[in-house]
Length: 129
Image 1 (spheres, rainbow, N blue to C red):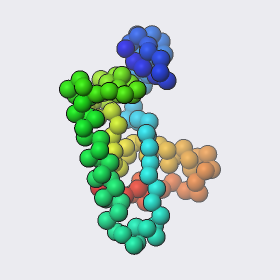
Image 2: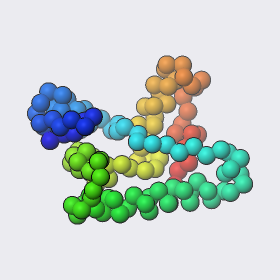
Image 3: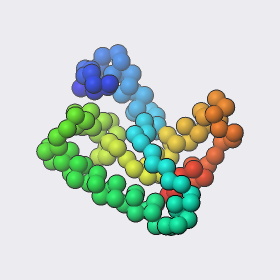
C-alpha cells in the first residue's frame, strides 16, 4: 500500500505505480522542512546552527526507533512506514548530503523560473554538518 495525501493506494494502481516508479528512478525526495537562521545570529553564536541540527537529530531518533520496532504512534506513521519501503530506513532525512539532489533541483527550477538570480551551489545556501 502507498499513502499519498492521506489516501491509500494499492501498489499497482496507476497513480501509486507511477509514484513508486518515479521514486525508484529519481534521486529527488520532497523536502519536509527547512530552518532559516539570521546570519547575525550565527555571527553572535557560531555553534547555534550545529547545536540546533544536533537537537533535531536527537529528537527524531526515538521516533525512528519506534518506527523500526513497531511502536510508533501518530498521524504520519502509516505514511512514514510506506515511505521507508521505498527510500530506506529514514523517511525524513536531515542534512545537506541526504537532501542534495532535491536541493539542487529546487535551485535549478527556482533559477529557471526567475525566482532566484542565479544557480547557487547547495553549500552557498545550506550549512553542511
